[in-house]
Image (cartoon, rainbow, N blue to C red; front, top):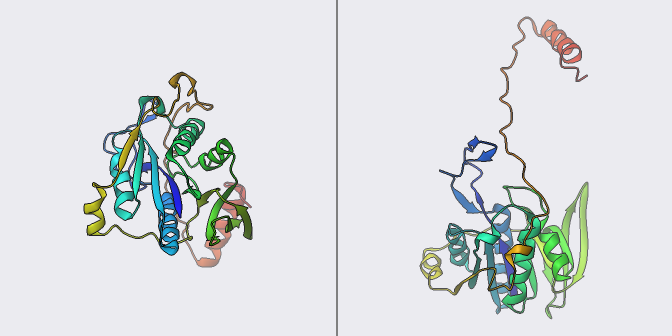
Length: 260
């Protein structure tokens, strides 16, 4: 069972962000593996273990600091890593990301399926998986909460979340899937896995290695500015007996807040 994971390194959700000049101040930010990608990693490892054979390759696009996240994926059990690292890849545009990932997947070799998290928790646009599938001319199933693969690896049945219920989708393989929370419970790296991670195959590819012309990597979207949400004002305490306080609350909601 050969699987490819498209992983992203993102700021830790517990990071307290600072904004200056319409942009996020990167100094002091702690970076981690995208939480939804952790589910994708676990699912690929589970499928490989169930099959008793195969290879799990993690592909991550990012600067030098992304090496830390890649080593974590290797420590969890991924067999090899491809680091896409080139100044031409910088930026948050989903189209560029998918273009680079598609070129890397084509060069990486044979695979039965591709997995990613349903979205990155930094931009939350949930576009890369869909774009990647389109560029590779493969089926795509998003927000997957359960996945079953036939023994001959020719077809998969995925359960996905939809508004008000669940949907079951059958698709031929290879295909692209994006993982939703609940598909599994991600494991922690073992001490042995951490020690072995640095001895596993680790390849770095640039735009030249992928046959991409940096001049053609033009974004389809532009980030104009970033701003923190306005600070919340203080709450209002309504004094008095419960019945009178309730009346006053209703009046305020109707006349001042105008929500009822």
